[in-house]
Length: 129
Image (cartoon, rainbow, N blue to C red; front, side, top):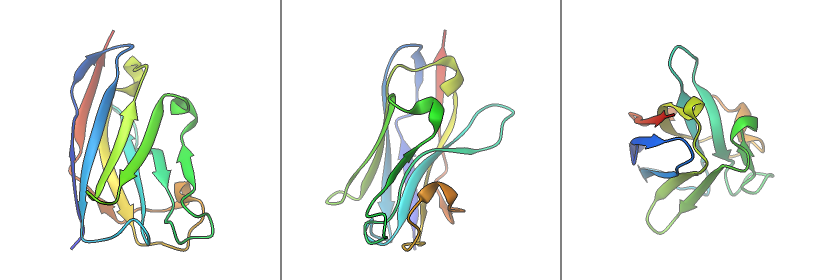
């Protein structure tokens, strides 16, 4: 059974940084795409960062949504089965619930197009001005 448990959300000031963590179980990063979605207030969920599976033709391609490029970094620790999202230079518009996601679409080269099957419960990030 796939499980994703996020942590690390907090109230932070604009300009600050934060690291979100996701404890993953029930699958491996080799044959699953993983990522982070964000749902801002009154907006639809959007993918902010993802990594295609390591065995895909993309070989672990990383995608970042345009507004977070250069500020967000997604990473994994296979030994600990952890997924991280390092967030820097926080902006008020980064406020939202952040979800860790995974999907067994191992063949997909570009993860941003995946309709992710597995979702964590979310962790709240609030950025104050």
